[in-house]
Length: 112
Image 1 (cartoon, rainbow, N blue to C red):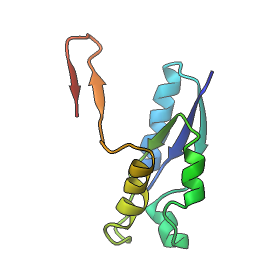
Image 2: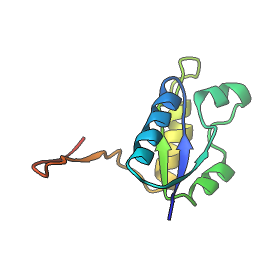
Image 3: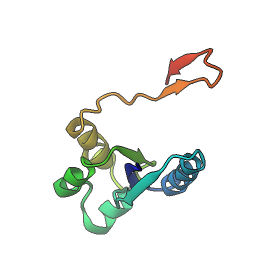
Image 4: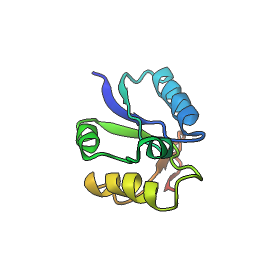
């Protein structure tokens, strides 16, 4: 069964990094069903919206979110951080920006 992933490419290098991450995951044999969401500083500049409530509700139905770098110098500080990142974290109970890592040799575990 494929994992349903909400993909948010973001801004700047975000879309490129996300595209490569998806290639790596697929190369590892993980089956993905992805949907891209246009959520970025560029979108805010284009139409004044960051993360509409209906989009957030749709994202809730996915197994995971793959989020690229977001933000652009043209958007004042705090708009993307509060309107996208913090809104998603609080709405989805993801308060900690935790990045677990397990060494393939099983010798070390650590969290960044």
